[in-house]
Every structure is written in structure tokens, then in C-alpha cells.
Length: 268
Length: 159
Ligand SMILES: Cc1cc2nc3c(=O)[nH]c(=O)nc-3n(C[C@H](O)[C@H](O)[C@H](O)COP(=O)(O)OP(=O)(O)OC[C@H]3O[C@@H](n4cnc5c(N)ncnc54)[C@H](O)[C@@H]3O)c2cc1C
Ligand code: FES
Ligand code: FES
Image (cartoon, rainbow over all chains, first blue to last red; front, side, top):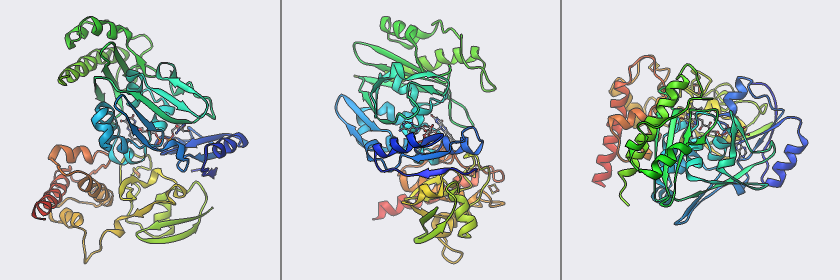
């Protein structure tokens, strides 16, 4: 790798100051995306600012109607957290399905979301659950967070502190995983809040989005069959060696049905 | 940069550039060449070591990031006279051929059995997803891990 300055601030204020003073800085959390990108020179920061020692980004709080997860929480910490698993099992399952065990031991919630990889799993969860991001500057609702390919509403120096997840009555995630990496070719998360249904889709487009058409169909008829003939426009969908835009549109429909099927197995 | 790293129970003070990867410190500075580099792109798991008891890919971590962690490498779990049960099981079940993937496989397999009380053929295969082997075809590796998982379960039941 090429050289850069490394900093390990112990407070948010210090992290911000270091960011403001550097030429071309970047934050690092677990490094599971950033270090491979730096090796490939897709990222060449002058200064790497490690968030690991900033306590404001740590901790998991589980309430009956909300779960708050610190940005530095690793995927395995989410997957293995008992109280979280009993209140919001869908989030634990999403985390347990990310990549491989070694990646889950380092990769963090904040890093995954800030990166907005089109094939990442967590974005489907924050969108479908209507989560709220708490940053060092403001609160951002999930509907406004993902902007485009690897692009979010965060400003360059902004730090995700934690994410607040409302707890649905029941929810389920279905992903069609790339067999080599585990990333989602398409992943659909369906959440039933009683008075509303939210559907989050990842993998299909440049960034995660809500499938409002599917939500309406499910409001009218909450069954997998309701999505069987749903019209999923493929406009703007990703097309690459893993899947064409048409195939991704097909997968959105199929994963949507599978998620509903799984969800209905949970009796209220 | 001056860093202090705890590896296999000993603290080492080193002067390395900030961009040095943990795996390079282990291999080049500390001579612990049991940890291998297969891909250098976070895919193959040959570089797997333990950080505070959990498996991580040491090619994907800066050495400076590992300063507050207790690192354990394959050299730290056993030796030729005193094999770790997972090492003994890989030998017993012919879980290796060329041996290149083996240190990483073993470090990941230990994380797997220590953090899962129930392991099946399917969950072992899923648990070894981040480790690639180009020789064995995996069957004997899975048998080796299953045997240790079963032993631990039997011991747990006996206690
Ligand atoms: C082999 C492999 C397989 C993988 N498979 C999957 C998969 O199946 N599904 C999946 O979803 N992901 C997968 N991943 C990606 C993995 O989940 C992400 O790399 C990880 O979650 C990113 O988190 P991190 O903490 O490592 O982020 P880093 O790499 O440290 O950072 C990523 C980006 O986020 C920024 N950032 C980090 N934390 C914050 C914060 N708190 N506030 C603001 N910005 C921040 C950084 O500046 C950087 O730009 C895989 C990765 C690998 C290497
Ligand atoms: S060398 Fe680290 S994962 Fe392959
Ligand atoms: S034994 Fe040769 S790569 Fe696994």
C-alpha cells in the first residue's frame, strides 16, 4: 500500500478537527471496504482517521418499540446480540448473512451504510424499517439517506453515530446472494407495522430504495401471491456480469414473494 | 510510527509505516510465517488470525489498528509436540494437502466451534465461507471440524 497519515482520535470533536485540517481525509471503521479499496487505489486518502476509539459510536440499546445500534457495532455483534435478536430478529438475520465470519467480525453497521454499496444488505433493512440515522450534525430518515451509487446524504466530514430502528410487528428478508462474495444480487426486506407495510430493496438499483408499488399491493392483499404478477419496471436497474436489469427485476418479484412467505410464517 | 502489538501473549514494540498491514508485521517483522497471504484482496482467508479471540483477515487490517487487540496466530495455538485439537483433527481426517490454506482454515474453524454449540455439515460449510482451499475439495476439512465440534459437545455433556 501507499503511505498516508494515520490518526486515532478519542472524541468526536477531535475526529472533526483532524478531518478539517487534512488535505484529503477519510474515516475508517472496520476497514473491510476501505482497506481493499485503498489497495486497489480506488481510494487514496492523505489521512486515515480511525473512529474505533470514539465511544459515542458504540453500544446497542434495546427497547420494546425501538432498537438503537451504534455505528461501530460489528455485523457479528448484531447477529449475536440476544436482546436485539428477540426484539428485532430480522436485523440479526440480515447481519448474520453478510459476507463471511471474518468480515462480520470487523465490518460495522456505520461503515456498511456510509458506503452505500448497491449490493449491501443493511440498506434494505434501514429502508424497510424506516430507520433514522443520528449523525454528529443532524437526524436523517432512511427515505432520504441513500442518494445514488456509493452516494449518501452524508456530507464528507459527517459521522454516523448510531441508527434507530423502529420495531415492526414482524419482518423478513430474502436475498439472492452472489455465490462467491455473499453480496446481494437482489435482497428484499418486507416489514409489517400493523397499520403500514414497508418494502426495502437492495442490489437491484444504484442504491437501496422503497418498492412503493409492492407496498400498495401488499396493503390490499397481504399474501405472497399478491406480488406474483407485480409490475417491476427495470428502468435504471444494474446490469453486470452477475445479472441483467431484466433478471434483477424478476428477482425483486421473487425475493419479495419469498420474504412475504417467510414473514407470514410468524404468527402474531 | 511506533506501535506496540500483543502477539501470542508477547508485546512487541515496532517502528513501521502507518500503511503496514497486520499480516506483513506478523510475517516480515516477527517472522511468524505460518500466517499466509493467498489473495491480498480479503477473499481467501489464508491470512486469518484471532483478534481478541475472533477470526479476522490480517491482510485487511492495518497493524496500527491492532494495537489494543490480543492477536493470536497459528504459532500461538500449539506446536509439533503439542497440537491444538483442531490441528490434530485436520491431521487425523486428512484435512489438508498442500497446506497453504490450513493455518487460516484452522484459525477460522476454532472461532466456529467456540462460538456455535450446534454445528452440522451445512453450518460448517457456511462457517468456512471466507476460506478457500484449492486442493482438498473441502470434504475432509468439514469432517475435521465436525469431529472437534462433536468432541466439545461430548465433553460439555460429560461435565
Ligand atoms: C469478502 C467480503 C465479503 C462481503 N460480503 C458482503 C455481503 O454479503 N453483504 C454486505 O452487505 N456487505 C458485504 N461486505 C462488505 C462489508 O459488510 C463492508 O465492508 C463493511 O460493512 C463496511 O464496514 P467497515 O466498518 O468495514 O467500513 P470501512 O471500510 O471502515 O469504511 C467504509 C466507508 O464508510 C465510511 N465510514 C465508516 N464508518 C463511518 C461512520 N460511522 N460515519 C460515516 N462514515 C463512515 C468510511 O469513511 C468509508 O468511506 C463484504 C466485504 C468483504 C471484504
Ligand atoms: S490473503 Fe487475506 S483474505 Fe486472502
Ligand atoms: S490444502 Fe492446498 S489450498 Fe487447501
